[in-house]
Image 1 (cartoon, helix red, strand yellow):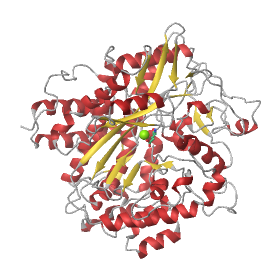
Image 2 (tube, protein in one colour; image 1 turned 120 degrees about the vertical axis):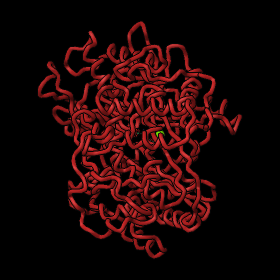
Image 3 (cartoon, helix red, strand yellow; image 1 turned 90 degrees about the horizontal axis):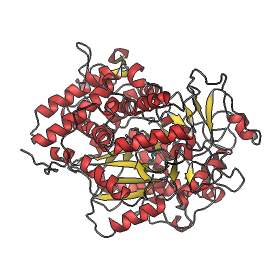
Image 4 (cartoon, protein in one colour; image 1 turned 180 degrees about the vertical axis):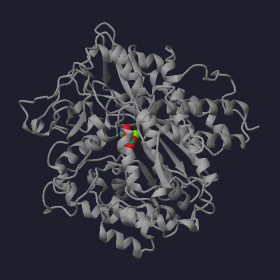
Length: 637
Ligand code: GLU
Ligand code: MG
């Protein structure tokens, strides 16, 4: 989850005093990088995925599933056995926000050949096996997006009580500080977000109204005025960063061949974020209740919302410089490519001084405003030992601001003095239960970037419409019932869209005829006479590619999963979990996930992940390839 520095973290008051210093030097660091590598061309496609995992313990006797707070030790052991012994080790492990979480990536990025698509799932399996082998009996590595009883009494092993007192990091009524990763970055982030905001974070998720759910559904917190005021009727109230950043996701990062290709991909993929998020929906339960949303996005957004009351527009501006319309964790606010310019219809708050400075240094308007927008934020953590840096050779201050802007897409300049190119990160997806599904979503997105570039596809629509799509995407069963703005004619890019724009698009007013509302099924699978569909386009791309039989078979299986999820033939994890709970004998149609329901659900998830249970509603049947067929990497024919 971003930059990890070692050292002594400063308090919010001290960090704030250095905020301008961090921003000033962050910009200098960016300028050094930009001028050194702006002309870099011909980097090859490389890409990699990130999977976040939870450590879960099963108490079969008492029918309880709880998160295990030993991610730090597991991580240490994984790194010790892996990357520290062998620089070519096939997996890499990193910490994540929860002390019950870890994050795994492939040891080396994947390259541009088709056969690499056939290695993703094996690598994910390797990760699962590696980490699982270090766990105790009755513990499991789970790829679930949100732990259903996160924040409920006794949800951790060991058991800790929350400490809603001054001096704590979260001050949460529900989420103990011990569940936060022990690296000081994470508790400092938590504390400083709260201090900067001036109050605890507030997360209100609409509750799913079942037959016996009290109406209105009102929770009272007699000991806590802040909570009583913040909790909304008919909502599940949460009050800590852990309720958001303690969720798991699936991300993909691409290296583009040049800065302009990276900017182009950033824009194109931004329009795809809500669509793939809805397709990957897997987080319907929060704090022991059934909610009315299927995706984590808004929850994390609120969980790290450090804006003051002034910045949120609740009080006149006095001590702060801007009104800010979104949390630091949110959808992007501006397109970066020339083609995107005319669709930039969101009011962009930017640091004027930084913007002017960047222009003066020869950076174009679009990139300058992007950076100047990220830099309206304060640094949230700063380490005493890391205040004075060598701006020509280090980038910590730039990364400090950059990596705490958690947006749907991230545009990533190369690190200083490295052979890494310009990259973009695709961040909206929810993590799936199995390695097969996670591979399918990753391969789908990577293939999509290939056709976007090869066929010069154009998905751009006004960015405000993408924002509307983000809202729809999180709703319950958005895959089946949601309607999303999507571009009607995606093939008219014509020429040279990467470095410029086709002439037809320049300067003209946004034509409302360019986009229309579509279902996910139409967008993904196409509709006769209306829209070609992304899967048919990918299939025709594949037909024209030389791919070995084994790889082709895997890719087709992945695409089939996506296709069936989009058509509703297969369920999303969110839908499947809802059905599981509603049929559970302990469920009282009152929107409550009891310990026993939580236990049965997670145990079933664990069986599915380890292929001990088939779950055709989620995975279909008969399209898994024969695994361990011996020819794992395949070769291009
Ligand atoms: N866990 C966060 C999410 O679900 C992402 C944290 C990160 O940026 O690695 O979106
Ligand atoms: Mg992460």
